[in-house]
Image 1 (spheres, rainbow, N blue to C red):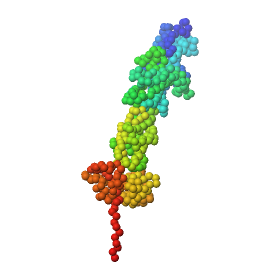
Image 2: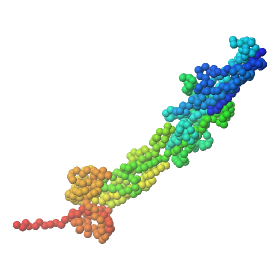
Image 3: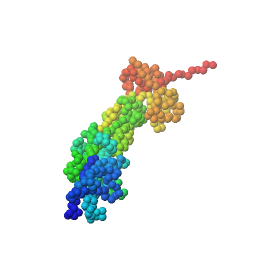
Length: 535
């Protein structure tokens, strides 16, 4: 009231909420009880920061009868709070920032001077009301945010879109804790944010959901280059979960969260508004459990086909390389592909032969082991079977069992240390004529494991086993009805020497058709007497 005689009135509304995504319209109304007088209303943005609610970027509208042509007079203020009118959304982090709350102030005046030719208390001669201000308070729900480098904050697939489009699939590994942080921010720095995990679809068994934690910080705003301090408009909540190797091998888990502010009254017409606050968007993350993917490596002597044949030669330690690797990879919270942390174990699945040991050389994502096998005299012709598998350290994945046949070859000798051709002949047949071995290795026999001996004093390692292997004789395949004595006579040797070369053959036993024997011919040549010289 200006004075008792001119009771110009104005509404008492002082605060008006404007809700994100909605259009609000409210009326400023004034009247003069003096008959015949009209009311003019002047409404302006008086925030004092150089911006204007009724100009870009806000673009609020003023319509009505407020120019002094009616009594009462009124102004309808209409404003939509959205991305084009006072809302800033960072396209990289999703941080939503409202413009500064606005103050609009109104003053009403009558036309006393014009209507009654009398002056009021003001210089222009008309009576004016006191200034009445309305606070425009911007309100909106929290949104989930991330960081520019995507290394921190809420994991996203697409930054914007539906729940399914925004959902990120993150990989987890058996036995390794996976930590996922959801971070949300309310666009009004004075509001507080809290994050909840949704009961549908729930969380994995054994997961630790933690609590919602406020993150006090200075927030960037459009109206202050120094930013504004906020106690709890930004909050985070972290879920931690370690998949186990029993129940989590074949499932994908979805964890969904929702955030809420602390606007306590239902001031906005949203179905997500509650007495406790305004619930924002839902956001989900899918956790995919990655299992090991174990293969035998190409250079491995094992695993490429079942019952692989491996040659062994007496009396060396034969070493067969076994190598397996895990190829599995996953995608971490920052969408970076990472190698799995699984370790590969190589182990025998049946009891090892007495002549074999399994040596573990390297463990980890790429595992290397060695089968060490040593045969001695009397083992010629023997065959042993070794069965192995490669598995991960959590017993979730295996290559399956693969077996190899280790075959000890006849008529071949593995040179060790100070061996000479003469010593080899002595040990294998009791003959000191080393020229026989030289002759037996003077031509390429097509076997990559045996050497072509050109210099008897220089026998080099070669072949797939990197050993010095020489032939000590020739292999002969027994025909039906043949005996040791018959073969000894045919090859001009002795039964004793045949048994020495083939210690696994029983002296009194019959020979079997197809049986292989090692033979060194001409070790028992007849003695030819000296003949007189004929003149």
